[in-house]
Structures are given as C-alpha cells and as structure tokens.
Image 1 (cartoon, rainbow, N blue to C red):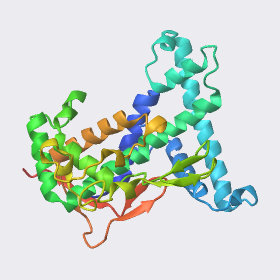
Image 2 (tube, rainbow, N blue to C red; image 1 turned 90 degrees about the horizontal axis):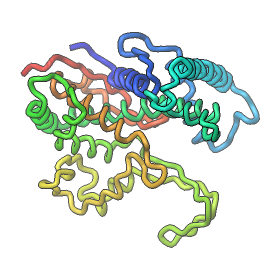
Image 3 (cartoon, helix red, strand yellow; image 1 turned 120 degrees about the horizontal axis):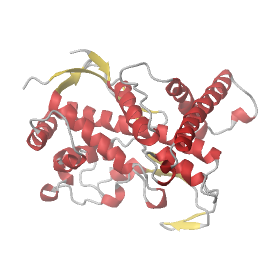
Length: 329
C-alpha cells in the first residue's frame, strides 16, 4: 500500500538486467542506491538531450556551470566504464576460452576488437557500453511505466491481461522460462497499443546521405529531417480511430481497427537502424508486466494530479506515483 515512484523503480530494475546480461555485473540498484556510474548517467544523458535539440551550440563558445558539471560527469563516466572494460579484459586473460565463447556482450565486442582486424577501438567499445546502458534503462523502463499507466486508465484491460497471465503461468507467481511470454497475446496487444500511443521515442532525427525525394518533396543531402513516429501511428488512415486506446486492434481475430498499417508502427525504428535490442526489451517488458499482473493491484497515489508527458532523453510519464498492494484475489 506504499506510494512509489514507478519510473524510478523500473529504471533500477532495467539497469540491473542490462548489467547482468551485457556486462556480467550485478549492479543491484533495486536494493541499493546504485553504483556511481548510475549517478554519472543521470547527469550525462539529460545534457546530451539538451544539446541535441539546441538551436545553437553554445557550449563551443561559452562554458556554463551546467556544462562544467557535464564535463565532470562525463569524465567520471569514462573512469567507471574503463574500469568495467578493464575487469572484462582481466577475466578474458585469466580464461582465454572467453575469446572464442564470450559470456556477455562486452566480452564479445572486446574479442572482436582484439582479433587482429581492428574492428572496434577502445573508443568504440566505450561508446557501445554507454549506448547499452542508455538503451537498457530509459526506453524499457518507460515503456513498462506507460503500459501500467494505460492499465490504470483502463481497468477492464488490466483484468483481462491478469486472467490471461493466470491461465498461462499459475501456480507460479512469475515467468520462469522465456518461452512462457509467448502465451500472452492480449498482454502483447496492450504493450503494442501503449507503444503506439506513448512511444518513448516519438521523434526521430534522420539525415539523407544523398539527395532524396519524399512524396514529391526534394530533400537535399545533409538536411536534418525530423520523423514524427507517433504522429503517423495515430493517423486514422493508418490505424482506425487512431486516438483511441484499443488493444483488440492487434489481435488477429478481433482486428476492428481498420485500416491497420503496421508499417506506421515503428517504436523500434526500421531499416538498417532497427533497434538491435528489440527482442531483449520485449522480453523484459512482457516478463515484468506478467509479474505485475500476477502479484499486484495498482491505483494512482494522487488521482487529482495528472500524469503528463516529459520529453527528456526519452518520453517519460511525469507524476506517475502509484500505490501498489499485494493482489487481493
């Protein structure tokens, strides 16, 4: 029955999962305040977002206090990540078999950088570690949070998802095998509808490497193009009654939302830049939501306070304070 900041707790969970799978490290942020690296990330990524969207690159001309704090956090992040990479290299020296059979992503990319072909420099490895930390934190956590918000707005969908999870995994209280997540078609539909209406990346920036023409408009090479991912997914011409939260539109036998153009649904991007972490993200999302449905009742802690969209590095729900209690029935 305690009030909890759902986004904060979910971000801790996803950081722990990413640490274990990608780096072989148990950060254990769920039970502790979290490692120093997390505090650096909390300072680095908001400034990255701010600079990406800045009309003028002010930091090239003047250093504000926030820029100096960013520099310190970035240097601290580099120190922490270099330590993680150094520990992985030490494990691989102690156990050379890990070069041929790495146990996690970090070991695999280090092995690729040391295979004599120079495919990954130390800078590349550092950048990939930071990308994984970001991709494994904000995006997945906020997708789960938006879905829980949708459940609170539509309790009938929560009841149906709960019944589906009960039938699929009872008497277990959580998913025990990865294959079990394939038994949740309605829960998947709710997740898809949440990602359609509340994508954590509602806008994507693109730049053509050669002159292009889109729907009769000439786009010169090097022009910044902002793709409004959510806008196209909410158009009635792509999804019938596009502004309505309707999970049934995703179910084969209940596709009432005609037209239904899945090409307009791109929460993970598309083409060569399609998100490589999609499968892991969906596994986490399904697993956490199934555990949530199976074990907890949820209600808004402050019903009069509206949950609003906040676009930081990703689009997150602001004021999503909830009251969790053990499931009553």
